[in-house]
Image (cartoon, rainbow, N blue to C red):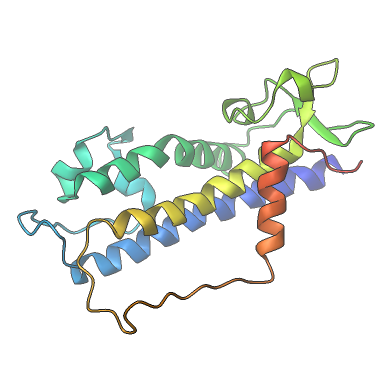
Length: 205
């Protein structure tokens, strides 16, 4: 059971990391086609992977370096800064297990559900656990930790779409004054995942 959960964690981290790379590939492919509101900015070619965008010689770029290197508006510079630490935690966890043979802390099966120690990295960095939700031996629910990884990955995609809309020129509206609203069968699962993170909920044992 613990092996299965380990594989689940590795799979989720790998997929979330891949989502960032797919997002970056879309950004890089479309970058030359968009017109910025600030036409004084000289756009430069963007890398096709998220790691190449945020790292320089293995060191994360800081605020302002994205604009200087790639000709990005300040809003997009801030977008990359917001997700650098999170992406690096995905990358490090995945690479340590997949390529460096690192082990992970024990996953416990408790009366409330699957749990890990409150000191387990990188989950302890996410701020999803409180003392109120801990068991007496400092064990915390695995569910909100995994849920946070998923939510932050999807949030990055949403954040980019909102950010890019503030810096590019759009063509004329196809149907002026109208809005398109979409929903899918997965909406309930996404809401449930957010609630699990916010309330530090448990999986059934």
